[in-house]
Length: 213
Image (tube, rainbow, N blue to C red):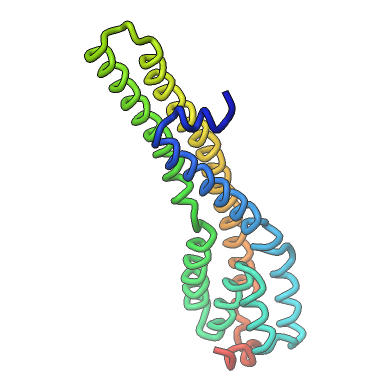
């Protein structure tokens, strides 16, 4: 039995199950690319940024470039824009920007988690429909029609297997990607706090940055 025959034997519920698998695969590929640590939070960015500030090289143009360079850069730029307002305001600005960044990093993960949850349920629904078909056949024709009974049982087993085949890797990838997001967020928080600590008491040296607000 080839793949097309298996899908056909599984009945109409195979369509949403297959569609879910395609969506889950697309989300996994997109998030694996988007959540590269080197792309989201480049190493050494805080050190480079603080050296630029100390040497007086930071200006409005470089601040705009920093904001668009990466997710971490967006957070640090938000803090620098409010550095002269004091430590507390700077941290609040970083937290606000961080919330937006976390939302962006977690994009599509809820969808992936939903697929992991509903795929086995769709498979179970296919099982129930298949068994109903079997019992209906028994009631109407008795147990003599083995082919019809086998078709209903086959539909039940195929949809169950298909649902689990989609759900298991989707759940694994959801947990993995969520863990990667959490690790990146922790690192960005550490880098942002390092910048705040480094600049605390030296906000006067950032007067040029303030002009870019």
